[in-house]
Amino acid sequence: MKHAVPEPELALRYLDGSVEDAPLFAHAAFLRDEGRGRTVTYSRKVFIPLTTLCIDRCTYCTFAKPPGAGGVYLEPDDVLAVAKAGDQLNCTEALFTLGDRPELRWPQAVEFLEGRGLESTIEYVAEMSALVRAETGLFPHANPGLLDDEAMQMLRPTNPSMGMMLENISPRLLSPGMPHHNSFTKDPLKRVATIEAAGRQKVPFTTGILVGIGESREEIVESLFALRDLASQTGAIQEVIIQNFRAKADTPMRRSPEPVPRWFARVVALARWIMGAEASVQVPPNLTDAYEIYLDAGVNDWGGVSPLTIDWVNPEAPWPHLDELRSRTVTAGFDLRPRLPVYPDYINEDWIDSLLINDIRAASDDDGLAAIRTRIGVT
Image (cartoon, rainbow, N blue to C red; front, side, top):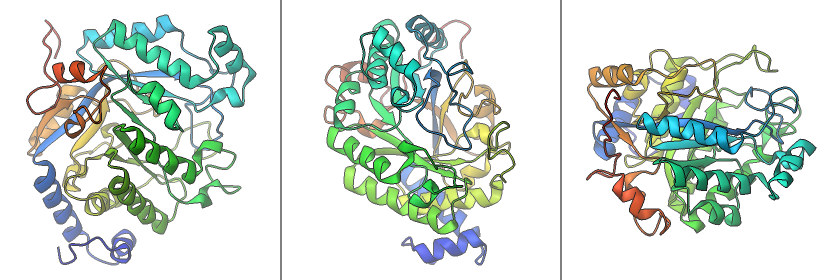
């Protein structure tokens, strides 16, 4: 590739199609092979939707529900039932996904929390994370939205990693008529502050961008460079997700166009180029039929894939069967291996809480990936 150093202007030209994209894909694949090798990873998980109540009003979301129309908290017995079922299927990750700060909007959320002697949903995440750790072999990965230093300190003893999508660095998406209007937690400054807190608190952090929600090409490129800078400044970004928007029925954006896979793959390749060879770049395999195209664009990870639970954020898009994921990845010339929710580079006393480090090491193989637990009839 002629231009080895990422340049915003050239990145934009790749996105608008004014230059041939073959060199971009070739360079992205080269960088991935150089930094991550030919092993593609995934996290074997269960999806635990701890609450579908949320303060925000994003115009593309079907996860969040109001009270009386599906907006509830999971009870501890329900959380544990999902986690134990995942444990039996050799899952290693309990992904806690939930609406952000619903107690600031819904009296029903306040009532639920007060009934448990809690003041915040984050406290309930901590309580349920501790329950999962005590009763199963799974490791929680909390994805509860905005987090400050105090919240991370609360979750760190039970969560070896945490996450929150940046989505986009542009405040324009908060404007009237845009997808994040009236969505308190989607302010990019608040999201950047969360990632910065992860650096201070030594929390391995997963983040990324959502492509196709009305952002401009310039805003895509700016967001990728912002993540590169945050990765360098904080050291905390263990993984960058590049996620394509999928239109959903019963949302204001139900008729919005979705990114074309070949064009979206250019965004993925740009992410690899901008983030660098050592970065972990992920694309969810359930949101594109021919997801192998993203291997050509430099990905090294498929993210969390569940043999048990649906994708509660994209319920219309089923996970590929793990045998199919393995077959298609191997056919493309790669090895597929399971990992823990925390990446190998972060498995040390500096980044993992003292209450977790021994359990994480015991669950890891010599490469820091997930050690294979064998149960009869389970693959």
